[in-house]
Image 1 (cartoon, rainbow, N blue to C red):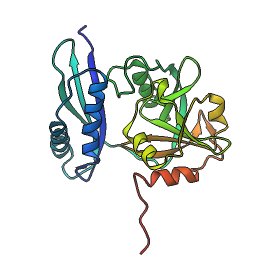
Image 2: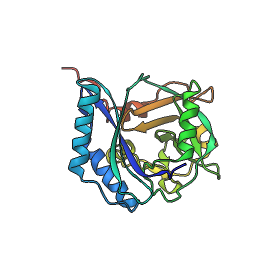
Image 3: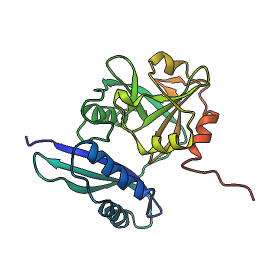
Image 4: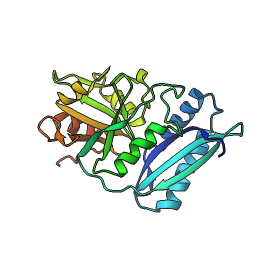
Length: 244
């Protein structure tokens, strides 16, 4: 067996043949390369690859592009584009608690790192179940992130929080966009008890935006319906049309 790849990646949504937030995805890949001690790709080359790959894979249609900057062993890192179908887009998700344990911060520096076993296990759990996402907790029982998203929670007291990045979560572009627009969101250390008493639980990533999680391990979150905060935050990614 050869050496595993080392590096990071970003995942962009393509809508009508257009890569959403291409410049930000390119900047994020450069940022993460620097965090990992890799030479940075040229932003203009990342953007060009995003645009070229979207056109080739989807034409004027929709899809998802993963752009990876990684290397094997001591080789120079290389850019790779991996397209995939967008798939269904339910307006609410069902989630479960993963059987995998989040590995913690390690040496990933909050990057979207390739070859993380816990993420692969979490995604396999989703593929093999009726869940849309799973929640990964660390060895101390604290919520870190999901297999493909960050989380935002409205606590029982009405406080808007997201898991502390120091626990090792990916510093996702979707979460960054939300934090830029809603400074009242606080970082917190959250247990399963906090999740069980939450008024709202939401997934956030740059492909799906903000999606309310209305069911966890077969039980409703709060009243089992999307809450007001999920509707407000969703508008950051998918604005509702204004009446004229």
